[in-house]
Amino acid sequence: KTSPNYVYYDDSIRRKLWEEKDIESRMASALERREFVVYYQPKVDLRTGRIASSEALVRWKLSGGRVIPPDQFIPVFERKFMIGQLDQYVMEEVCRWLRGRLDAGESALPVSVNVSRLQFYDEGFVDRYVEIRDRFQIPPELLEIEFTESIVLDNAGLLLRTVNALKQAGFACSIDDFGKGYSSLSLLKDLPADTLKIDRFFFEDGTDEEREWAIIQGVVDLVHRFHIHTVAEGIETPEQVRRLREVGCDYVQGFVFYHPMTQEDYERELRRQEEAPAPSRCGKEQAPG
Image (cartoon, rainbow, N blue to C red; front, side, top):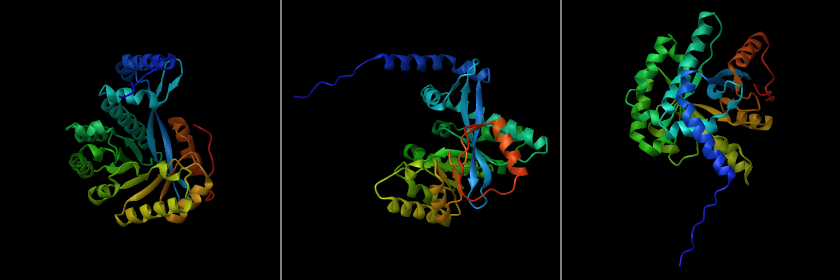
């Protein structure tokens, strides 16, 4: 005899459902009104201690000033198959910003833009991104396409064909969340990636710290053999920065150096970096942007 399954419905579930319905009803108009803003989270070169590039992250800023975090609206965009429109919106905003800096004679560092796995099933995806890049006349070396390794679980062949097309079009490619899936090593064997982002999962407190760092060392050594750069994400302490420098990791992204920041704050930080001498080789926490 099996026991019945019970589901309890309470006010928190009701509120969540209403919030999701509200997001769903406003998504299209929010895109038209350009309510989504791009934040930038720098990636720091461990050899120099300076910003080398950044990742573009999207936030939804309502007319009243309230900011909706991505974990609340991105799942809704994915369920309604509108995530491609949002991804392309971010790509356009990044290219518009880079074009402005280039026209003003200011320095422009590479930016990585995230692409949902649903876009890999769109045959026109690569051509559309090439069109956006070329419309703003952005040099290819300033843009990187970032995607999660979970795509390989859906369709490894499709992922390989799409990444090859992106590379032929001049884009750099980055594998995000490396280590969370089950196909990591087979992925490296065939995929022509430029950068691998080691998931924050590796840097969470575990039962055997030395064993964890031995695995990180092995990952870094392995991907360097394929001439792939490494980025450690979710780094929060100077001690983690020290260990990552010891194992030869190339870049760090995390609160130990920078929180995601607005475009204006990122521009201010780039100006400060250009005017200041090279920083010390230890991580320092910054206030949120």
